[in-house]
Image (cartoon, rainbow, N blue to C red; front, side, top):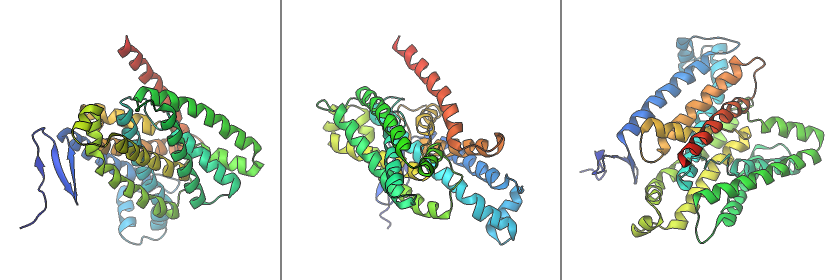
Length: 351
């Protein structure tokens, strides 16, 4: 008889999904939203693989993926597919990271690009560029170190016998402003070619993605996804409040630090390869929460929503704007409008 736990529905109406030794719980509506979003991502991916200076039909794209079709296969598999995979994986990482931080702070503004972790990762990457030079591994290490050090600094400055979400956001905004000034200073002091490369990279772009980047970063993001899935139970307990979580045996600060580390690592790895891409981590979790209509933020639905948003934004950046701009430019424009609407909504709720 198999020892595996079958798929079942618990007393709270959540679906229990066995994944190895981990039992994942998800709301039925969240599963439906995640599935529909995943299908939309697949359709957008096919459009992205077909659309370009060398146009292809969807059947031609499928044939190029399944067999050698000469130049069409080269266009699809070598030129377009790495960028599409990167957009999906990186968008999912940004969405999941935003969901972790917004759940941890219990605030829709608790996004890594608002509270400074994206900026810290950018600072680490700039230091790596100016000291070591252009190298993917050193930029990844610098971005990860910068993000983690920024997270540690924000956490320590916000600590007052514990962590309160709104205080963490305010401290993060202050640290973001400080790091932005530091980044400007570093770029002004750098050699011209280094400063230009860092500035272009800082706009957030998928244009230079190749298979080397994909094979290096995507497995690491997948591993972090497993860690995130394992933390869902304790994280949901934290949503009930520290006292309730402690009563259920959750290690409060240990859980927060682990979630913080996983979220920073997700955002830092993406930033190391593409530069800072705003808006996705901020908006994807809230869009997913509204679609699922749940009490909390579903991390899986936020990840699939993030993948769809980044892939769609990259299509707009490549094909609908003259001259083809970095995807970060598109997300910043949309994100600014979204942030204004979110702030207005938060202000109305406070009245």
